[in-house]
Structure formats: C-alpha cells, structure tokens
Picture (tube, rainbow, N blue to C red):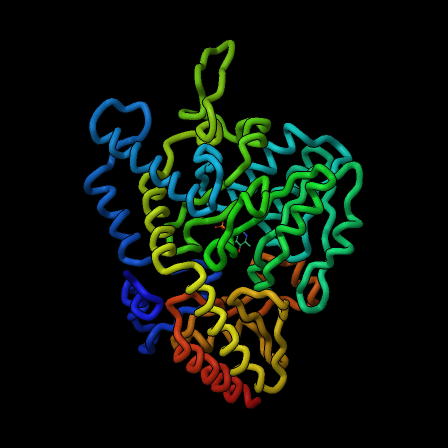
Length: 406
Ligand code: PMP
C-alpha cells in the first residue's frame, strides 16, 4: 500500500538531476509525472495484450476489449457516474470541450443564443465556443471575478437571459488555484433549465469529484494531469444529453450501419468514439486512477494544502512579491511576480537551480488582461513534493532576487 511519504519512490524521474541539481518538479498543473505502475501498464499492454478492440473474435482482441471496457468502468467509479456509457474517452480535456461545443451547438443552439463562461477560463474553454460563435452567431458572456480571484456569483446570476443555452466553467483555475463553487453554479443554471459543462482538468487530480452529487451535465478532464498518460482524457456526459447531441467525428466504431444512402450511429458511448481508441492509454489511465484511490484523494489534498501554505508563508516575506489568486478555497498553485522582474527571467534562473516552474500567460490570456499583467511565475504542487523542496524553492527565489540586486 503506497503512502504519501513512500510514494515518491514510485516516480523514477523525481530522482534525476537538472543542471547538476536535484530536480524539483513544481510544474504539476501543466502535467504530472507518472508512477512506475502506469508506465508498466503501457509497456506490458503493448507486450502482452495488444490487439485492436471491439468486434474481434480472437482471444487477444477480446482480452484487449475487456481491459479497455474495464478501464471505462474504473473512470465511472472514480467520478461516481451512474452508467459506464456516460464515460466518453477523448484525447483530453480540450477535445472533450470541443466535442460538446460542436455537437451541442449543432443540436441546441442558433444565432443569438448565449454561452456563459468565466474570466478565468483556460483557452480550451474559450476558443471552442468562439469557433461556434463564428459558425453559428452565438455570443459568449463572461462571469467576472473579484481581486482575490473568486467568481462574482451575483454577476453570474445576472448574466442569464432567455437566450442562455449553456454554462461552461472551470472547476479549478490553473492560474489562481481558485476552487469555484461549481455545485452552486450548476444549481443556479438548472433552476433556469440550462445545462452546465465543467472543465475539471485542474480539479480531478486534487479534490474528490462526484458528478452525480454536483449534478454536472458534462465534466471533462485529462489523464496526464492525474499521473496518467498523455493523449487520453474523459468526457462525462449525462445519458440524456449524450443521446440528444449528434456525433462529433465520423469513422469506424461510431456507426451501427453504413450505406451510401444512409448511415445509422452506434449506441453510447461509441457514437462519440470514432476510430481506433487509445485502448492502451485507457488501461494506463485506469491504473493512474487506482493509484490515486489507493493513496486517497483526501490524503493527497491535505498534503498539497500543507505545501501550499508552507510555500505562501515562505514567499510572503519577500519584498515586492505579488500573489495572484487568494481565494478562500484554493488548490495547490502559487502564481506570483516579484517587483519588476520578468516572469520569464525568474523561470529561467530557477531552472538553472534545478527547479521546474511554469511562466507566462498559462493559456489564460483574458485572465491576464483582467489582472493587468502579461504573465506570472507559477509553482504547482503534487503529493510527491516535499516541504524540503518548498524550502529550497523559497531560498532559490531569494537567490534569484540577489542576482537582480533586489
Ligand atoms: N483546462 C484547464 C483548466 C487546464 O489547466 C488545461 C491544461 N493546462 C486544459 C483545460 C487543457 O487540457 P489538455 O491540454 O490536457 O487538453
């Protein structure tokens, strides 16, 4: 049974050096590292069970199909979805949101209709709607936030109109760390018969997500941000919605019958899974979710919260530091700037000291415009990070400031 303390050893990359310094990996919001069990699942999948899934009568195809469909059930359990066919496997959060934007707009939206998003969205939850806006003449309305980085719920309520067709907001901000009150957001929308899509890319790795309890209509996340592989992710959709909206892509697997005159579509979830699925990636995703479940998401959250508080405590004595995102409810992300030091310079110099942080606009340029800045330095923690790493990080930021004579 892994524990938070011992789990670090499951991640071989964490013991490597960068520029002759021990790696301190604080870029977990961009992607997480992978435990041995996940990597082995991929390797052994290709060595032992590789065969294309579905429709194959031969032994290996059936074995691969069973593993792939079991993986879907693991995701179902992890999100507490009611039915396994409400779990659509996609390439990631981005594809999941594009799928909903495209198919939902086709089925349920026309010129003049409105989608509500928030000012803190990742570009993945803005641009797909803008593409539909250009195609269909729909409009985006934006929930503002206060200076702590919390959504203005009063303003949200006022954004609804007769033309509101969907609300699409992030569960956790990848820049501010804000944990949005999504249950309340969903409740408000449902009172007006408006469905809600939640971008869960930054939530699923850090907090327990129960799609039935939230009553989300759609919920998206990416495997690679929760210790799983790249190139696979999840769209949860309520059966009633997935039934109502048309396929996103055409190809093998998503059809029931095809003729040149007429094609009929497959049942859920295959209607949305055109082409050979990533059946090795799905099993690796399931392995990652099982790994997280063994550690316990609450234990993960508690450790990460401790790291967050420790980092803020260490950094706040630095003169001229500005934090972005000081919400009451916050996940383990610290975004900051010091004086007039460019975020890029800070990131580069921290890298020379072995510390991986992200700098820039974090794919949230409208949020940067709201904050009146070009970018931030962002440190984001995972359960395998330690207080000792945070101490080195704080000392390293101070060292960088000395280089700038601050
Ligand atoms: N939404 C949020 C909040 C994110 O942080 C990210 C990844 N940075 C995405 C969406 C997009 O995820 P992916 O690139 O895995 O599709």
